[in-house]
Image 1 (tube, one colour):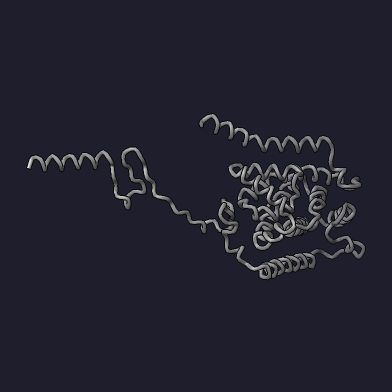
Image 2 (image 1 turned 90 degrees about the vertical axis):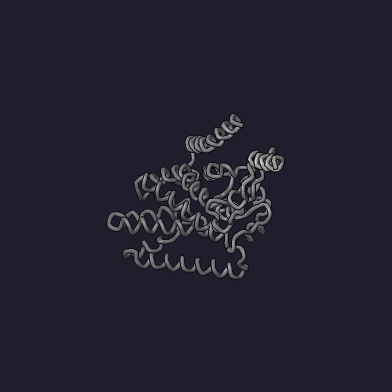
Length: 312
């Protein structure tokens, strides 16, 4: 009997030393010299539009049902959105105050600096009495151009500087850029994957590698891309969801990153009547300012890497 009691005591002692717990109660089983952790299953559907995490991973390039749409269905959906946007702009045009006959010919999207000058003179005449109508009109048109990657937003930035106070114009341009780019993000998620891979495969692959490299600093990377002219904004808007850039750093990086270039354009708009080309807006001073902002956007990345090296 004493031998049996001794064996039971030894068995309890071994159980206590091993600290073995019911795996249904705890996800970790601790035994001497090793720790076994049950794998956790991530629910990839909780972020199906790529707000905080990429829409792609290393095993597959498609993790969202939006990509399952056929090309024809995606084209139809994008076409419906485009036509609806045009109808909204047409309704805005109908609600605009009556214009003189010679002014109506200038009320259209500005394709060059001369168009911007004529449109600015027309809108400036009505701005005093219809300030919010003019402001809302510029807001909608700017978002329309950004959403469908249509050239001409630079002229609206210059025009905003001509029509509105500086800080209001800057806030307007930054908001329109972020909203329009985010809408373009969703449209590209529907159709852009096929277009980007067909027409820009090499550039998309290069940027995808850069995004992977900077995955822990995507916000700063997006700010840097918006400040610098390395990639055109329309290409960034279309390819971002395709190569796995999440929406939140994309939109926030756009809002912050477009501010320095918009600063230059809005300042130029304050002397719109003297401009002969968009290149007149640029000077060595403006280039220096943009370079400084680009370097500032990289400072947090540098400091984070240094701190990581220090603690590792």
